[in-house]
Length: 169
Image (cartoon, rainbow, N blue to C red; front, top):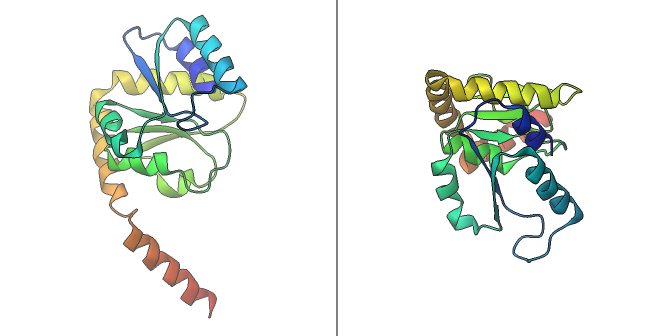
């Protein structure tokens, strides 16, 4: 909802927002929240596309067509896979300071916005700024790819073992 409100304030005309997935996976039922979101889209007069459920093996295609990943998480997700996938796809990221997100991204590959009363405004200004700056998007893209190389199962396992060994001391 916050992203759509922010999008309504973006002054750039030729942009599209792709909303991927659905809350009930492959069930053709909409939640009250999804209906509320669709009503908000009708009011903002921007190009928003809802994909509905997408098989995981097809998700990479959607990352490949994106220029920016905007993932304004409102709840404290401890390990958001969409952040890691966006980085691996080489996308510059606009996200929020929530949950485990700051542990994965850095300020070279992502804009990390606080979840405060200025969230919608800050999202809109950051989206506009990043869209207008192709050079910055390129640098952030490279940093996303570079940083994501450390987010593998092997690296996770090494970190886990390291933490276990340190806890025994």
